[in-house]
Image 1 (cartoon, rainbow, N blue to C red):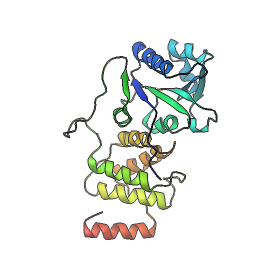
Image 2 (cartoon, helix red, strand yellow):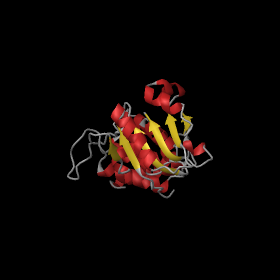
Image 3 (spheres, rainbow, N blue to C red):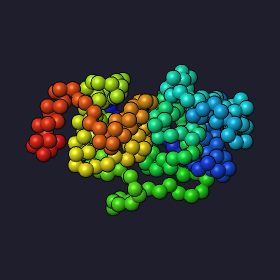
Image 4 (cartoon, rainbow, N blue to C red):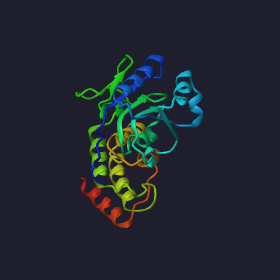
Length: 241
């Protein structure tokens, strides 16, 4: 596939009164009079989580979507407010047509990789911790080697095919991941899923990659198609990839 970078503005806010209200004001600033705000929540019962969401869910200028990828919404989405989205669901809200602006209110996840890769504006005070250009820093941040593999997979994978089913896409991903694993690399699963969502991966593909990576971190070696296995063995023998 070719990378489908996010071209619309993004923002991120904490789950505080200040953060939630700042995210809403930011979206209204990106909204035309004729548009509605699309509110995405992980579960329908999330709409009862606080007075902010209760109020929004009763607003006629707000379109509500839960659980499912926004790609399945046929009408133009306009500004989108995503509440408490997890790394494996970020692509559910990011990879859809007609998004004018996207504000994410963080729940249990910091989403620092997502914020960095999308150049998200921080709303409501505070700051998103970004990786230093000099290297080092927070545990689990993406190394240059991991980013290079993710870039190769972004260019090489067919996003219409499932990564966890036996086939060329899975074999391609496994061969690259095992090469790094055998060099002693431990994969930060959540950050990798955030990176994929920010770089245009299909709604369910980051979670599928995350499943593969979790298994490899546990010492499991997923199977590859014979041709990929032979090439992997040859490359391993020669010491390069």
